[in-house]
Image (cartoon, rainbow, N blue to C red; front, side):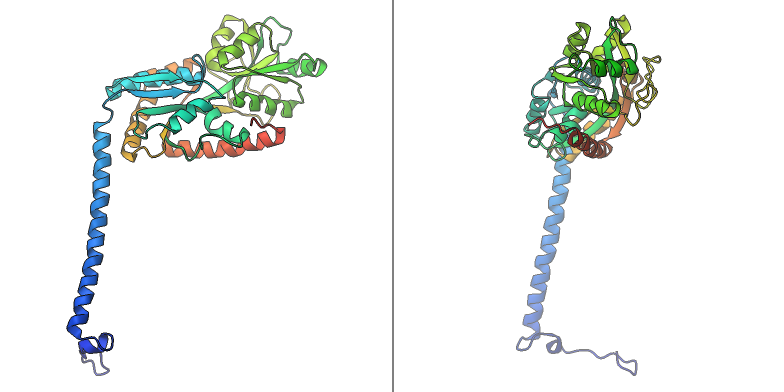
Amino acid sequence: MRGDGSTRLLDANQVMPAGKGPVRAMRRFVQAGGFAVSLVWASAIAVSATASAQGDAAAGFPTHPIKVVVGFAPGGSPDLLARVISQKLSERLKQPVVVENRPGAGAILGAEIVSRAAPDGYTLLMAPGSTLSINPAVYSKLPYDAQKSFEPIALVALWPFLLSVNAGGPIKSVQDLVAWSKANPDKSNYASASAAFQLATELFKMRTGARFEHIPFKSGGEVVSAILTGQVTMGFADAGPVLPQIRSGKVRALATTGPSRSPELPDVPTLKEAGVADMIVESYGGLVAPKGTPPGIIQKLEQETLAVAGMAEVRERISQMGLVPAGETGKEFSGRVAREIAMWTGVAKAANITLD
């Protein structure tokens, strides 16, 4: 634009590199632009094709049975929860959803199996806090990465632990237990079925000054048996295996580690009510899939799992097991895992616990 308001047209030779003719230069410009446009279209087509493939995979999923791996022996909360959720998922997905128990190495075996499975949505893990948040805190090396080896699907339940003793013994309260352990340090011991219960007990010791030696067991059922037979002084256990024995009067629950009393055990105080401050412990249970599972399939599994978790019948059954019904999306589940890893890593370091 000139100062007088008129427009000055530039000769093509004035905007092209020296020594290049305008037509030849323009041809090169168009060719280059055409190549760029082609790349854009190719990229768009690839994205569209990928999205379409994922949508088709999810639309046709599942076409054969799904396996839910549980890293513990039958009878514990992860196992019972997996069976409740799998039954209803099977009905909704119109395919069998089968629970497979693969206990071993503190649930590491089951997690490793799923982390290495084909990322197609047909092999899932019922992952409790011990697998995703506790193991990373106590093992320097694991055959899986809790935050990188899995695709979180949905969290379906939370559960506090129950601090329990033999009902036939002299210990009737948390205060009794702490006093007895201090008076009998050579006889005081505790059972745990995984690192989760071990860390919970070590945190209890730190908060109260109680003294207990650790005796490991393979399952929650074995922990309850050890309490019943007097093999151990006490044990933290999830409600699944211990609740029937509490109801029968053979095991005495001294406290729950949850933030509030359990509706199933309204007479059992929280640890805070029992005089132990700053100790709220809740594990969790949720489904995860191998990393790389198509987003469309993850989304479908998340949607169906949350639908199952929201059923009145399912929530009632979960409550009857002494667990707290929940429903967190995969994103929310992932955030919980990260927070719990940070917390338990601090506890393990303070208690100098490593399981390598």
